[in-house]
Length: 176
Image (cartoon, rainbow, N blue to C red; front, top):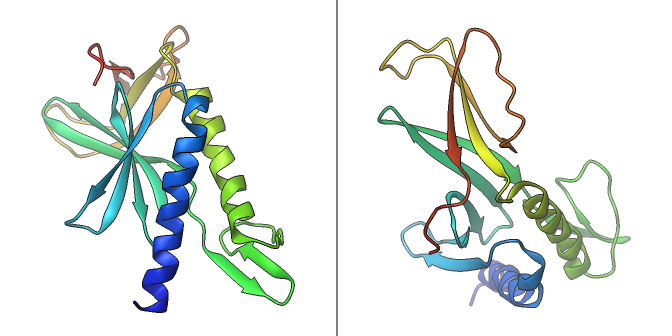
């Protein structure tokens, strides 16, 4: 086994173990699937069909939201907890973080990054939230223009003039 493959396996093993230990902290049950085609793992949440986390062995961990509106697909990267762990004489640090926080073990850095995941899911993945698709400068039945996808509280949508809006439920009606 190559050294890179061994390192990659360590990250995936950590995620699997961490999810089992922290499953109770999430508002919706997280589950992990392996995608052979792209050699990555997919993290999904039960009852949340539009949000998917893609995990690559190199430390990349992005969450994407996917919405279909008027037969067009809209996709946005809504959360990122990617980490590139480096080591120097002071210890381990994440090369993607703006501030170098040195730790004795890389697992401690991963633990910190994954606490952000718990905070984010508890703040945004709630039954009281909805998905807002904001279309700016769109012509009918075209994909020309710009858009933004947001997760907002269903009781407080803010609409801007000259925009079209679509709202969809964050939580599916049928539990997966």
